[in-house]
View 1 (tube, rainbow, N blue to C red):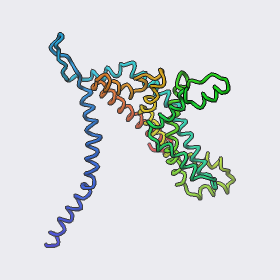
View 2 (cartoon, rainbow, N blue to C red):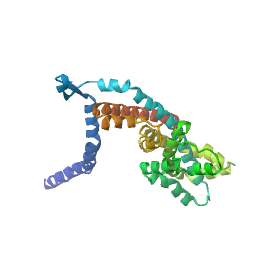
View 3 (cartoon, rainbow, N blue to C red):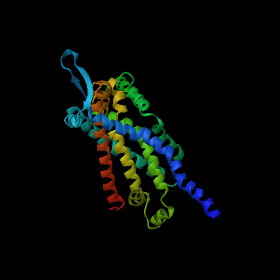
Length: 307
């Protein structure tokens, strides 16, 4: 009887212990994710209306239903921002993944010289904050400080406007590519290092060279890592904000609503329309979630055979 009495508190402690460990993470999730999302959804259904009429009307917050969502989906500036985002993503995502995979395959070659230095050098730009990276590239883009334009002027040629016209999208995407290649390269390189060496030895015994091994073995086996990096790159594209905002003072081609997040910021903190900004944020978040789920489902079916 006494043994049973002693085991009861011990079992209770074992039952409570996992929840005790989960409590801090749960509180952080609640405070910094669930509550802000819930408040944004609440704000998206609110709006300001003038009551009283005449010059003495008073603004008051009231329930407006889906009015802010209708305004978001019919706003030409918001929709045009997605068009620019698509052009930016078509440039940034394939180039980032292509360079990351190329560098990872090169570093994974046997007896490659300086692999550790090259790996660190490629990864370092990822450690630079996005705003700092944009400022650094902004100095290189500015006509008065650009090394390219300096060389062109020394050669008697006209300077090139890097952040104007057709060069604008590649210039903005270049900043994201420069900072994103290292992170994606590390993920792909780690995945390559996890492939058993016996697979390569068997392929070499069958007469395969390094190109055949890379194309027939390495790239298919790192398919899940490519899906993961592709998903990260896609989510990063939908959240583009820092690069165009930093470059905006340098050119007239980037407006306050150039991409969706810039328009949301303008609505919230310049026009003081928090409800419309909240509705746009919810739409953008749900769109990102849907695109991510669809991409995962499609790529898992093809690369992993998951039904």
